[in-house]
Length: 42
Image (cartoon, rainbow, N blue to C red; front, side):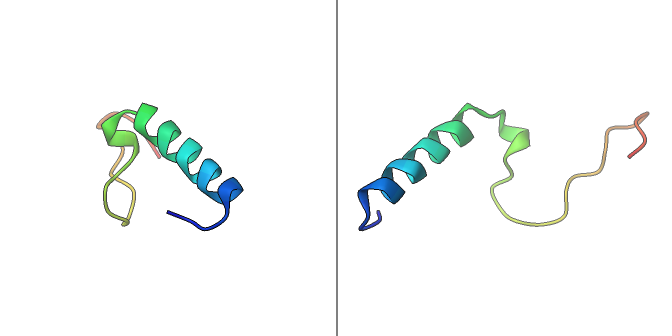
């Protein structure tokens, strides 16, 4: 992935953390955040 082993290890760790998040917490494409659920004020 990356030439530098420390960067590659860090990237792998970040990807592991992202995998642990619920699907709705990590949108697949960048964009505006989703609207808050009904009944909740942002």
